[in-house]
Image 1 (cartoon, one colour):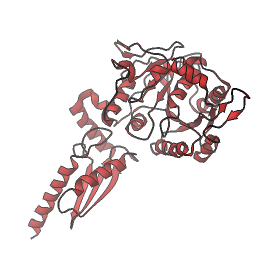
Image 2: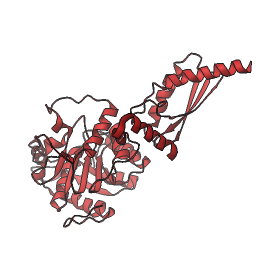
Image 3: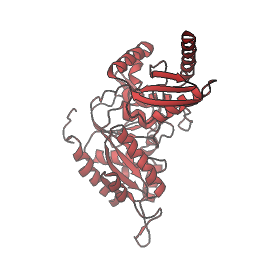
Image 4: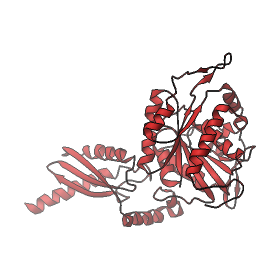
Length: 378
């Protein structure tokens, strides 16, 4: 009886592995069996217990993988319940996986998200994030880059919002990037900011980018790694909203120094800001500060402040998250007008000057000293 029971058990495990081969790691784009992530399978009286070894500890997409595992295994006949636990791969397992990926993809294996890309000649990389769309994150990214440029720094901007790019429009960039022996040469704005966006690579800037997560992730890594940024003091990365594949790719693959979070006064926006902060912290990415955008409108008649979206809540939220509050940016029709014309570099206001000074005094001082007068390699 025992050999017969073992044979049935092994057959069941074989079927389970077959079902698990349909579960794809969202970051790498290959199935978890092929990646060696299935550490253990136990079957007893129709109850299946599975241990999955993640490539990254505390991976925010762990729940997605667990859900996909449960869904696929529950489809099998005879399965009463599924229990999925996760652990993380050891260094030896990661080395074996890296070698396997190199054999499969060659040099492209470096873009699978298993290891961070080289920092190049970039002193500091800062990502601008938000928990939801519509908070003006791209405008804040452009304004921060512009202010850093005014301070005398060499600055670049990477538009990582692949499916909703805005940076090229904000800076009035339309020319296709040129190619050099060192990679793609990013176009330069009128003030000297280097910028790259997927819109500059499309035949039609209004063409919809309909790509799945793994493709978007690889494009973001290519926009960073295959661009000849030259010597930069700062690279600002404009991230897409949310806590999905694209932000995760930047956090895990690009050697960023930290993130600046953008919110608006609405309670809904602040609630989702918590998700963005918690995601960054779960992957050990420093949160450098919070900026509240569209905090108020200056009345054109009396000069008073009108709180269109309610009382500003950014400072209170920053205290709750224990991060620096970098100030409030007003809702300014002039900025909207300049942004629509691609002239965002011309925008200046007392409101944003305060934010820029707080950014300089809080964020820049928390990083390694970088002089705007002479280039210092990291």
